[in-house]
Structures are given as structure tokens and as C-alpha cells.
Length: 135
Image 1 (tube, rainbow, N blue to C red):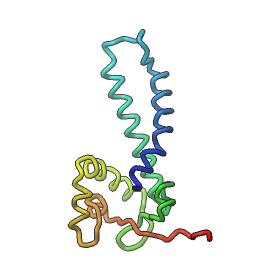
Image 2 (tube, one colour):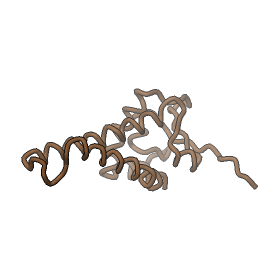
Image 3 (cartoon, one colour):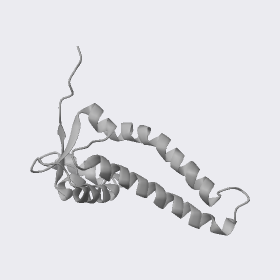
């Protein structure tokens, strides 16, 4: 659920990044068609770098993304400490193939602690923090 919510929230900011990138590198019909593949690769790397920076910043030093906050999730180390920038970067880099190929979620089904593969390898875990309910 959190991944779907995250994707919906990130769609808008990513479209703004695509707009500015397209404007800066001239993705118009008048542009040089020989450079189209280089420009496309540049756009993909820009989006990947922005997403990586967003998640590393959001997961480190006790912070969380808006969907994580809404669902009452916090990312902590296995020992219960806040995640460092280095650990968040390792988790994010490992999560890319883990999520893309679905291995991480299959791993969570059989893991004794229900951790995904990228959480297990990075030494992190998602914990549930109950959100205060307004009655």
C-alpha cells in the first residue's frame, strides 16, 4: 500500500523535473535527432538521482516519507537506532533490483521476521508506530 501511495505522490514532482529537464536540453522536434538517445539516458539518470536523493533523505536521521507517516511506519536499524545516511543509501540501492524483480517481497513471505531482502541486507526494518486517532 505504501508503494502505491508513494508512487501517486511522486508523480507530480517527477513531471516537474521532466518538464525542466526537457526545457533545458531542448527535447523539441527541432532538436538534433542524433542526440535523442543521449538526452533520454540523461533524463533517466536525472530521475533516478532525484528519487535516490529523496528516499535517502527521507529514510535517514529519523525522518519518514508522507506515506510512511500516514501508515504509521518508521525505518529503523535492526538494533532500533535511527538510520544513517550511509545505511539509507545502501538500502535504496539494494531496493532497486529487489523491488524491480519482486525478489524482495517474495523473500519477505519466507523470512522469519517478515523482512524484505533489501531490509535484511541493509540491516534495517520497518516498524509500526501507531498513529494517534482522533475520535
